Amino acid sequence: MTKIPLKEGFKVLKENPLNPAGLGPGGFQLPRSPFCIFHNEENKGMLRKAIAGCTVHAPWRMIAIRPSTTTATSAVDSILLRSLRDHYQEVAKMTPPPKVSPPSSFTIVKGALENNGPVLKRSYGHEEINIYVMRLAQHYEDDDVIDQLFLHVDVSKPGQKNSMQFLCGLYPDALGIHSVSLRPKLEADGSLQDPSKYNGPVFGDLDERMRDEFHSYIEERGINSDLFLFLQAWLYVKENRNLMRWFRSVGLFVTDQKSTKGA
Image: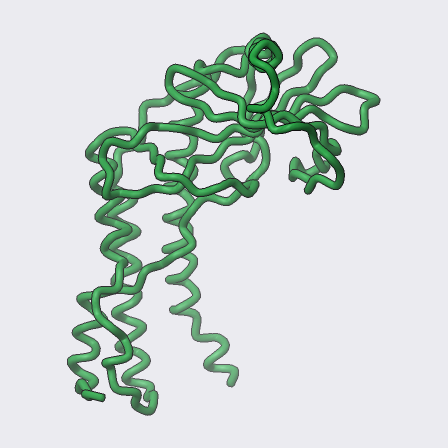
């Protein structure tokens, strides 16, 4: 194995900061797909730069393993902190999307930006409707991607143990239902429960007339493409906050010397 002097190793570290990983949004489990959402091309390019700058371009196994010293640790920490700070500032410079309000029949759930619960809610007669949202994974190599959001729509009624839940794909000009199921009502904190019994047929196996009737059912309750612009902007803000919080939290962890002093 070829050994590289520690000084050159630091140079490799500086030029090739680590991938932060785990930056995707939280929420209910859904399949990955090559769709992504950006407010505009400028933000798209800046976010690419911020995350791509974290990619490893050199094999770490080439760096010789040497006994750790206080000086070496301090130097490595400084390099990492500088990278975290630079990427934090890069994301902070992104221009936020114009403020968009949801349709008047919906209200924004308090604290939605800080948790993985519902984003919007409304009452429809004696029904309570909650909307969860997430976006699909990003694949930057394809610029001709289609904006698509995943919605989890929960329709509940008083006195009923179960609620009717729809998993939908939302586009700027359309909405499609992927599945319909009856499941236990949401927990008090808004979290989703795993299904424990048969939840219905594959939606595509239903006859066309019944599928159309289900679409009419949720559209009558305001679940349609009018939600897209607000939810797209909302996700942009949430993901930027999460990314900046991650950079800051990791930086604070690296700079914390309490555990070292107490050792």
